[in-house]
Each structure stands twice: as C-alpha cells, then as structure tokens.
Image 1 (cartoon, rainbow, N blue to C red):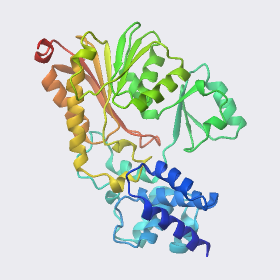
Image 2 (image 1 turned 120 degrees about the vertical axis):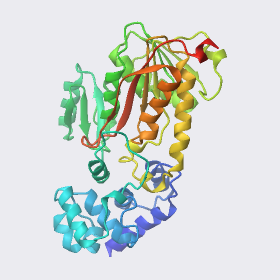
Image 3 (image 1 turned 135 degrees about the vertical axis):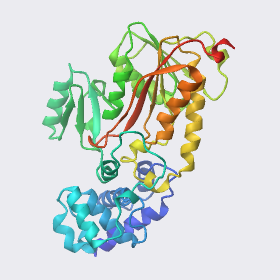
Length: 395
C-alpha cells in the first residue's frame, strides 16, 4: 500500500533525526545522502515531519502514527494518505477552519489539550494571547520580503507573471507562501530583502539620524543593519559578531544592498574589548541578542520537542553579559535597541529590568511584537536611552 510506503519513509527519517541540526538543514543533508528517495518521497516525508513536530507534546501517549494523522489533519487543508488511513471519518473535514478541526479532534481524542503543544512553564511576555499563540503552531508562517516603495510594483508584476500568490501587508512588505523560490521569480536580487514582518517592525524603534555612527554588535548576517541603513542611508556602521562565517554572509548581503560605508570586526562580547574599541563612541547600538528563538518556533517546530528549559537561564546570563559589555560605548542620551526573537519574559522584560537598574538607562518604549496573527514570527524590542556616566564608564 502507498500509505505504508509513505509511513516507512517518515519513520526512517524521524528515527535518524536527533534535533542537533535545524530540521530543514537535516533534511537537506539526509536527502542528499539518500538519493534513492524520489521527489514524491522527499515531499511527503518533509510534510509529515513538520506536521508531526507541530503537535509538540500533545497526545504524547497516543500511537506515533495516529499522532501524525492528527497533526497532519490540523496543519493542512488538503488530505493525505495518513489522514485517510488513520482518521477516515475526518478526511472530508480537512478544509474546515482550524478551530473547528480542533473541536473534532477533541471529540476523537478527549485527552487532546492545546496547552500541551507548548509545555514550557516559563512565563511568557506581557500581552501574549496564550490560546492564539498555541493555535499558531499549526499554521505555516509566510515568507516575507521587504521592498523599496519605488520597486514594489516591479516585484508585484513579476510575481503575477509567475502566478505566485502574495499579499501586500505594508507599503514595503509582501507576504508569500513559504518555500517560494524567489531566485526563480524575481530577476534582480538587489530589489528585495528577505526579512520577517515582525523583524521589520523593530525598525520603528531605531530612529537614526544623518551621519550617526551605529554599532550592530551581534550582527549575524546583517538583517537589522540593512533595515537600519534603509531608514537612514547616511549613517556609518560598525558590524560585529563572534562568528566569522556569519560576517562573510553579511558582506555578501551588504554588497547586494549597496551598503559600502561600514566597518567589520570579529568580536567576542564576553571578553574585554577595550583595546579594540577604546576610542569608539556610538550614536546607537543594535543588540539583537542570542536567545531561545521561541518566537520563531512556528518555522522550526522541532524545537517544541527538543528545546530544554534550562537553556533559557543560560541565554539570560548571556544577554545580560552582552548588554553590560556594550553600554559603555554608547554616547549619553543615545539608544540601545535590545531585541530578541523570544516570547519568554525572562529573556525580554526581565533583561530590560536588569539593564535599567544596573546601568542607569531609561526605557522609552518596549513591546512584544505578536506575529502569530500575521503568520509571522514574534519579536521583543525595547528602546533604552543612556542617562549619564555609570561607574563602569568612569573606571
């Protein structure tokens, strides 16, 4: 039977996955090493794996394949052989609204609890609608691109010509189906930046001025720096990260974005960097801090199963240490933009509270940007302004 063939492929991949690599990278490597799997096998195995992990810890005592059928039913509006085989009475309901499908699953499995999808006891940031947040794990996030207003019509024309569904979510942002092969659709990669919608919204907190000197201290591949530069092209940038390979990616992205005026350094912010940065003073610092990434788990649902709670405390220590390390290089009256893609209060409001109490900063504003209603990630952002010299500065 075809369903047995698909199930074997699913179980084979699942049994080889240990959570060390992100699922998408693991699948790429796995399929490359197992070329006997045809395109249909790869497509269905990928769909089933992502569906399965989106269920989190719900129905953990139910047979694995029945759990898969429940997950696939909740995550998709098209049927599958697994749904037809294990949930035949519900197959015709696969295109119902998510709330209706959840209600049907609760009738079949009375032990199903939505709160067991995301089981972490850590307190969530203020303003999160827990039930909406939990439901969002059954919905694949969109792919978002940021486009200059002068180029957006050209992009739209190319998408229409290639029959790609899209939605205009802001004057500079388009949402597309996840997995869209943009390089096959848009002729010039310089016309757009791939960036989550919530990540784009953090730019409202930057407020750069002409000729400012800003430091993106955990720059990774440079997404926030490119956003900053788009808001004010006449700024100077220092970009740094502890990972040299990330900065190599950043340089490629900067070249496409047309950013030429910047300085680049490999810096470990957990070490003393006075010899490297002794003469630097910045008009703004972007701190997109290393974090649990819990606000992005809609894209990486395997983390619902593999993330361990103790890591939150480790990230909090790291966030506080990095914040303490960079504040001394910030000019008086200038902003530190603290950001995470976490939904945990300990990584967000609690770190901000620590920074303002220990380094004489003032919170101008902060928020958890809730992406779960927009098929986007959720992000935390705070704008903190340095008030006066601290003891650390004077030392």
